[in-house]
Image 1 (cartoon, rainbow, N blue to C red):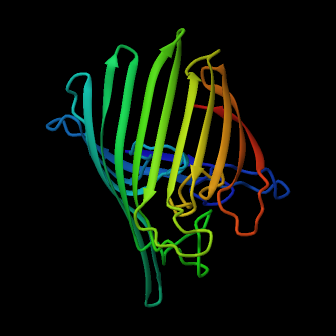
Image 2: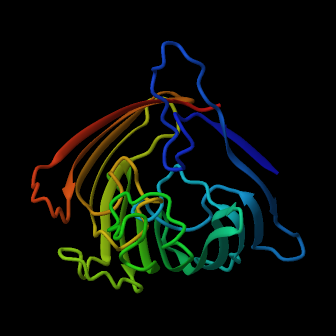
Image 3: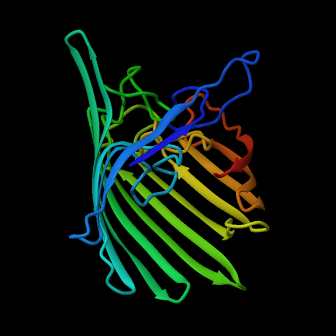
Length: 296
């Protein structure tokens, strides 16, 4: 069983940030995770999870913001069988279930994933995963545009999402430092948007590198990534809020330092702009974040 609370200025699933405001008003605590996990001894490698859980899928923040904890059910299987460990998982997540009088709004997501972890040689590991996401009821049960083309207002112009996501991650040492590189690609097979400027905006990719690690006092890491996320490629209500969701392209620079084993300070700089802007605004945005994280 698991239970986790988190801060947050509101119930936005993509952020636990709390602004210091409101003339000293009390701040919110939310139920961030509440789940049951079953790993039977009679089936080594099998995992069953139900409830509001940490994301069990292999992914990057191009598709899933790291703060999002999906709700529903997941069944995964990963046997231990040498240097190559295949895995597979099936998820059924509930996005919305609202009843107003006789009107019912239901939106769900089904995810099917398969891949493997391959320890090529000592300290060199490659993880690859292919995932298919099917969203039911999302065009009429949509929470927020967040970069997706919405026309008419409140309705997805893309007519939904059936996305293919390919993720690759490779870790290896260089001069005694751990290095991790990744490449992520997504395509929306359901995109039928014919609005001006938004035709064929159904692809996205995310690539980057991280050097170093953060486990104990004195550890440090630096990272860089570039993302190009077209307007109808993936649901903007779920992906990276700091990057400003979908219909966005740009650079992210990051650095983190362990002040103590349990305390890190980190900084991120986002230099991004819209992929498509019908208003003709070509200016970029620069945002920065500084986080002090205490783990206990």
